[in-house]
Picture 1 (cartoon, helix red, strand yellow):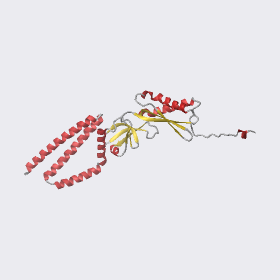
Picture 2: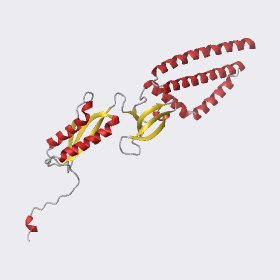
Picture 3: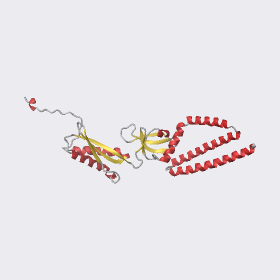
Picture 4: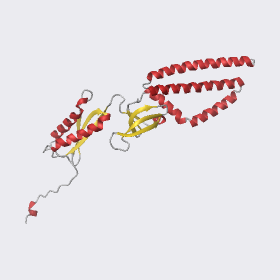
Length: 276
């Protein structure tokens, strides 16, 4: 086979492979774009498919070049060195892109969801090829409120930590408010106060959520009364605060219900000891 004909065959194969490659990447790109829900995701998909296209075209050209030279040994050594170098240098970025693909295809969370990755929780406001961006919840404060800090989580960490999505199916999560009452208290009245105080602040969600339920357990010095209810995760802290205040105010009005707290009482059975 003379050099000119060999070159013609190689060039024909190159154009054919590039055409097939563009077709496959085009189909993949259209399917991914159907899953995109924001302009940012559309931009990421276009960038990703463009990078894929360039990488595969370069690979085809390298293979064609060494094929034309007839040095398959050189191609193997070159490919091995390139693969090892890229695998070491780009391990985390490549894993991050794989995680981004998982987010786009599997949808473990989307922009607007409240999630927890490792020990960081917050509301997702952007997803890129390399990072997930969230508005932090909690962090340097003890309550579940937006802290004002923005956190960038590298995508590769999604394969290393559990992902908790508070709003995958709906915005409602289970909340709890607890109060301790004395054993001398009217338990039925205390339970009624707790339930009515809770219903007052979650009534607007009653069409969607279940009715709140009470649970009790005995401690050596008090009776623990807990109310469990569903409410939107983003207002849960406010609702719990309002319910707690309402329970306290209602119990203060009752003479036969008393909140338990750590204290010591001294009872003298023989009152004559204090008489002169």
